[in-house]
Length: 611
Image (cartoon, rainbow, N blue to C red; front, side, top):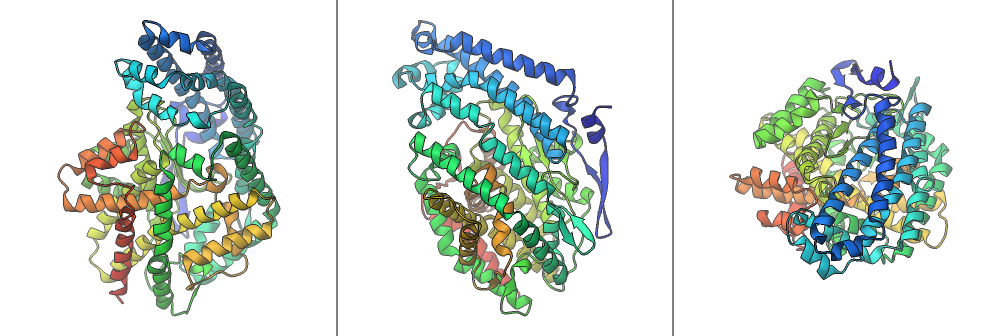
């Protein structure tokens, strides 16, 4: 039996601290291809390579004359549709290879499979680079006139979108060089980070654990367990600090070179462009959150310190459960029903879409050695369906993570009919969908909770999640900005990186969190710094936006769900200003961010009143 099939055609029964989680699903990737060594996958790869060459032969160097012909609109429509079909085909191949690899990044066979697929697809897709470059050399008025009429008008949002990249594009040969070198550049360093992180072992007592279950112990009810876990994390990360420092220096320099050649002014401008959000909007968000640190994180952690009877919490106690509150392990069936019921209370359609992830085995939930840490929802391609990866361990936060990733998944399913070119959504709005899924689940649970102590614990957990989503992510963004800005003047030492990290963490967390020795290494395991520089502010954007959206929902529920699902279904076809207009919201308004931040503060005030 092929390796992949034998691994995936099963479910895992797991237990945490003696409590059974139930049958945890493992995803079935055969909806994409039967196995790594299947003839179907090999054939698809060969066919994709041939189609890319054929596309280049048909259109390279000819777009200007083709669009000037009498049937230019029809010809261009045919070309764009063919290009979109190729994007879907290539996306399916690399999605499969990436998901197989994520299942066990320490397996040499999977690593080679992913690496080989990545190399071949990078080479194949280099034949497609010319298309967007040549389209952006067509006169704007000519292209606008052609796109005004069907059937090409279907792709008008995409054509307008790629025009935004025009000022930062290089000539064809340079673009091809950047593209082909990526497999031995950024992609290779990303892979080194993944394989290093997945292979790390943390010694806790007589146990040897991987990163995910070790991080889980930072939320244990036993303070000694939390301290031991933090020391183990610091020790192992410290032993690998030179590797992580080298990866960070290399990738920061790689980005500086690319940004300089393309003409980006600010270190984060390329991220803002890909997010289709203006720099001033992000700057307003960052300023609002940083100004709110004292009334949010500083205030909450002072309150939490009082609950624990100390002047300040050690950093390993930051996410500790409240004292004298029963800690319950939540089995997988309960987690599934909790999220589906919460979604159903908002929209039966939303719940039914989410249910397909469980029924279709689109979720991989167990913790396994070598498995990618954390969680994600991968959209794959519109012709297939998304997949969700979790590391489920039965904590209340794991239920919220399930709700979060299914929010992404529902969004990806709804946006898929837009096609491979227009289904992808900017990160800011993608995180809105996920955080809204969390909010629905939290509110549904809170509404059923009448016990005062249980309500206090739920509110505290939600406040901590929101601080982690808003305050912590903006601190991450500040750290990245300092790293990339300072790196432009020369390599950074591990000590410099640690000092930058400690500075932004102290500023954001406040005086009630004691940042002791060892914490200076904790920046090393954050994957977003490596895979998606400056991604992190999208979480804060999404959380504040969701708080505003939920306020609109509470005031006027009639028709809200339909408008919300329509926003998700738009995918990448509309700018955030268009998508938010039906809700009376505008992220360009500096006062907009205060709405979301005030909601967090209101919950902290409620907790203070429960003393």
